[in-house]
Amino acid sequence: MEHTMETVLFTFHRFAGDKGYLMKEGLKVLMGKEFPGSLENQKAPLAADITMKDADQRQDSTLNFQNLFSLPAGLTAVDNNYFVVPMKQKGTKQAELSNYSAP
Image 1: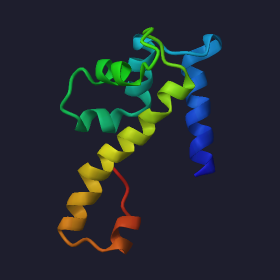
Image 2: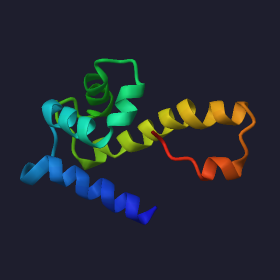
Image 3: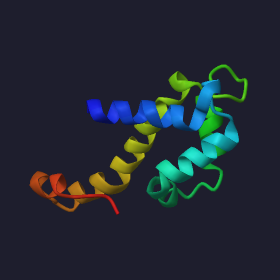
Image 4: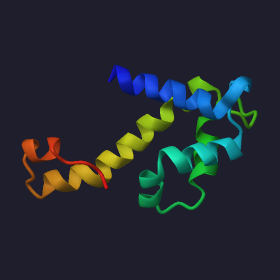
């Protein structure tokens, strides 16, 4: 988990650069490169627009690290509902889930 937190932190700053925030175009690039599988599974073509609107708490069309931090959590929840919940409904055992890797 600690490695995951470091990855999120460094990924944000790699895309945000020296300015320390992302605008919508930067968010689209980040989402396309870092979350391609999650975005393909979503049916919303405006995922970056929706994400930007939801995360932009200051309503200034920018996302700082605190604003963006909820993105991986939200996408993980979506992936959980998309992959794990149906597998459990089909009777997949916990051991099988721990060996599963997303496509």
